[in-house]
Length: 136
Image 1: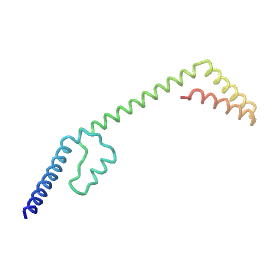
Image 2 (image 1 turned 180 degrees about the horizontal axis):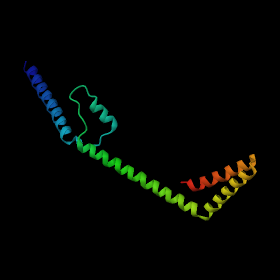
Image 3 (image 1 turned 30 degrees about the vertical axis):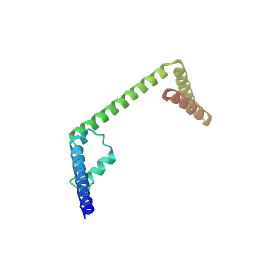
Image 4 (image 1 turned 180 degrees about the vertical axis):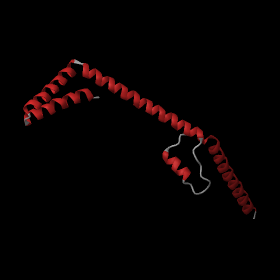
């Protein structure tokens, strides 16, 4: 009989510990969860949870996401600007001017002669010019 009482006592202590741990975990998530990174799949899981009230993103998380998006947009814009500068440098280089002149000459030649050969040559030279100025 004493063994059964010890078992029941131990069982009650374990159950109380598990419940207290779960409550503490939920409280910590509610207080400090806004500082944790949130992925799209986490947002879906939180909002589609049927076990409790639906949880929306907090304003802190929204601001963090907006800051990250702004940072990525600025980085993309900076990369585009650098690419535009590089294209401009290649256009103004000796090779770029030479390829542009060939494209222009063959385009003018095609307008005068209007043959398949001149069309192919004009397209080939203009494509090589475009490839040169747009290469990364």
